[in-house]
Length: 74
Image (cartoon, rainbow, N blue to C red; front, side, top):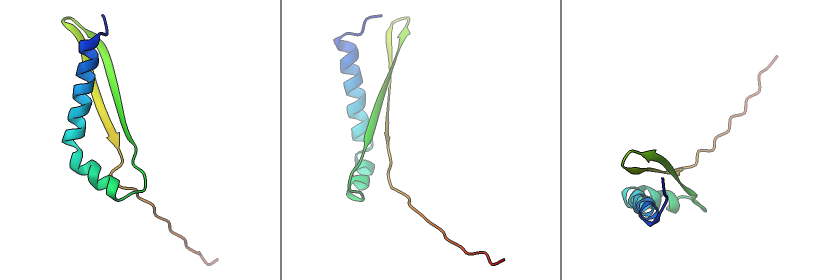
């Protein structure tokens, strides 16, 4: 198994496609927060025909922050 320029290009292509696919959701999340973190991962594994490339994207669309306070009388 050799990780060469074709494998690197495929990873970049897939990450680009994630950004295109999730553009609207990313834009919405970005406009609703002070900072947006987007994580990408790439998993490479041997395949009989070459290198299998699997990528993923992760981001939080909205932040949920909630609090409840109660007093229980004894």
